[in-house]
Structures are given as structure tokens and as C-alpha cells.
Length: 104
Image (cartoon, rainbow, N blue to C red; front, side):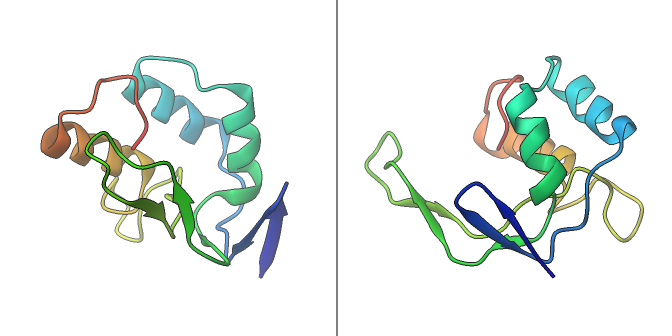
């Protein structure tokens, strides 16, 4: 299954998140998600872009890209594990010390 969001083609999205999943992410972050990001999740929840997307270099000049989209819901085990937005938020806070309001 393919979905399109503006200029991105997404392979195998998991479908739109429900309101409780958006609320759980906002609770985890301590902020309200921007409407544009919620709109993006309605189309591109989970799955992967048809191609890798390069982003501007990191603070040390390292190359950065992404090729998977995290899902707003729980994983197959019913947890917020790897590959879920909440699981990745928690991991990135612990490993990379990212600020509370920042998405990975």
C-alpha cells in the first residue's frame, strides 16, 4: 500500500492514529503537537518513504538521513518500544539527552 503526503510517497503506512495516540504523544512531550505534524501523521503514520531523505548536517557536520517513520501507536507487543514515537522519544532522551519537547 502506498500513501502520498505532499512530495513524499510512503510505503506501508499503518493508518491514521486515533485521538488517544496523539494525546499520549503530547503527554509524553509535555506540549501540543503542531497541527501540521498531526496532519502528516494522518497520512504517514509508520511505514517508510519510498527513498531515503537527507536532512541538513548535524552540529558536528555528520550526515543525517531517515528512511523509516515511527508509528504513533504501540508496537506488536502492545508496548511503546523501538519504532514507536513514544519509545523513540524515551530512548533519545536517555541516550542522546534531547530536550523534553523535542521529537526524535
